[in-house]
Image 1: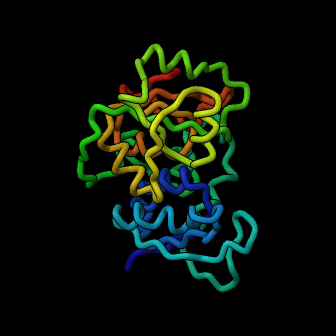
Image 2: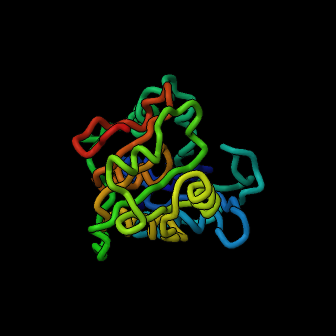
Length: 235
């Protein structure tokens, strides 16, 4: 019988935890029902289709408790937030730190771990994902990136939160917005695209899980998402 995990987020860390859950024998995971703004669902509804597509049953747990705390009586074998006590969290890759905490070893930890996506007709499109959360003190000029890589409204689209898209259009230039209601939808599009241009957010995690080419704006002083693979390019 499989093990049970419980996690409070964030969603990028949940995607990073998939190979660790497999190694631990976790077949069911509770994800907090933390609700997003109206129309955007919850962390549970956003994560569930991707987790179950990857063979892990996803169940909801109450979001009414603080981060890293769960509702009384919830039964699970592994607290998938507990690894956050590890040292070097800004420097050591998140998957490696999870492995160290839970005392498992994953050969080729930085090899793709997401699989089974049908390729759609987006191979000529590049995708842009930019969230303000991890951009403090960044020197990257996105208009310059767009010019250098010939990213235009004819061959690129924005994915991600509607607020991030609105800010992109205000600050930079018009792009189509491809809405991805769940992480599964986002993974299908990233699996099918030419390349991803992004900063440190869940789209990066998915691109790494798929082994797609990506160009990354790294948050200054952090290296905990870098995989040092041939498909990784630093802006």
